[in-house]
Picture 1 (cartoon, rainbow, N blue to C red):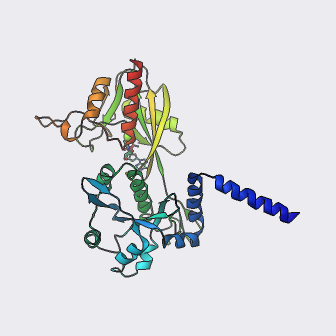
Picture 2 (picture 1 turned 135 degrees about the vertical axis):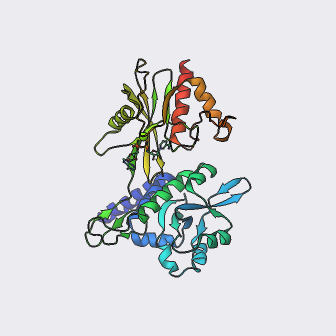
Picture 3 (picture 1 turned 180 degrees about the vertical axis):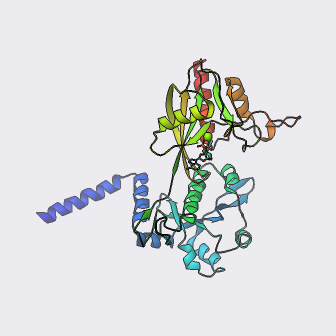
Length: 341
Ligand SMILES: NC(=O)C1=CN([C@@H]2O[C@H](COP(=O)(O)OP(=O)(O)OC[C@H]3O[C@@H](n4cnc5c(N)ncnc54)[C@H](O)[C@@H]3O)[C@@H](O)[C@H]2O)C=CC1
Ligand SMILES: [Mg+2]
């Protein structure tokens, strides 16, 4: 009886397995790689690798496009032959995803292993600052570069246990670090940030910080405090930065943002009463904050940093590019306004 039951169970499991979508199987495989160290070590030998140097991703130019090359494990070994302790460097890689066929993808920062110029001339490409890279690569590659860099940065800055001061060890997948002395496990840190497009019904509010490039305006943003809900953070940030009281808010979408380290941007639309037109700006953080009408927003969306420059040296307003969630919030507002008109 038990044998029949086991056979039935096996058959049901295998049917279920076949029924699972490619996506479900892929997520389960990735999760297994994080949990099973020997499986992950083995996966490294057949995986592909994205390269970084001092947190700048390696890109190759192909015509007008910038590609993000993936190196095979064999190519990685060949490059690392030029460095002592090649195997040890391979172990520094972190898991960042896998293909539908379960070929795992890793990211590795080679700053300590080899000179930047050696790799660049060997592989015919260049390590490019992430701020530039995100905006020149294909749209599907930028989230991967952003999350890989955040993970590499986190490992680089969490080499020691904050309780014992002893070195921490990374697991092969790079999904955590452990201090052997205290037994404490550290997981990669994510900082939630609210980003809010405030509207008073007919106009929306955008602001600029002194560090922004000339002419760039964006939605209000701020890190969530410990213990705060997203709603409370939105209300507080809007009150702090522009002195307005949010009457209602709606969550729109989220985005991982690698600056300054690893933020989860939570995009919201907030409504303030039409009578609350007066902005009282926090001039410690902001340089300018003002209301924009629909027409001005539509014009601003057409501008690029270069085309915003005027003869007298000043700049007309322009907004973050489509890769930034601020851009999506502004576009949603335009669609909503146009639908109401
Ligand atoms: N993807 C996008 O569309 C946009 C992304 N952002 C990102 O949002 C982030 C936060 O926006 P801000 O207005 O600057 O935040 P903010 O209004 O909270 O002010 C920044 C200050 O908050 C403090 N702070 C609290 N927790 C922090 C943490 N975990 N990490 C760093 N600083 C912390 C620091 O004193 C810092 O100077 C920015 O770093 C920026 O990269 C901002 C606008 C658009
Ligand atoms: Mg802010």
